[in-house]
Image 1 (spheres, one colour):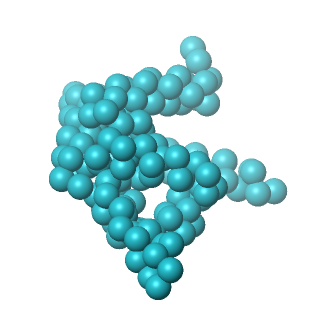
Image 2: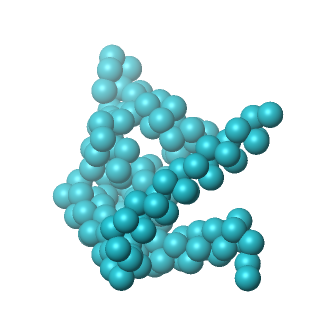
Length: 140
């Protein structure tokens, strides 16, 4: 039998593989999908996004440029010197994010469809406890 952390690592790999497949079907990467979600939440400038997502400027710039090229985002120069950019999710981007969200929810539901609600709740409690234990151990 695998150790707890080894089993979690294997499950995380499987989840990541499926998430990549779901995002790729919409023509974006997982990181780009997460960026779309942050933009939908109101983080509309590179500065706000960099702070919220804890990304360096060059990585974020590449991701934003890619989404603009894929027509999932539009950008508008604002301010006196027109150097600040405001990003807006386009209808194509809105649709991609919605489809990925729905497909991911279906994936999650299919995993737990045979699990009673009390077992799902117990797993959630135990995973949260594990997360806090790991955080505590790392901060020591």
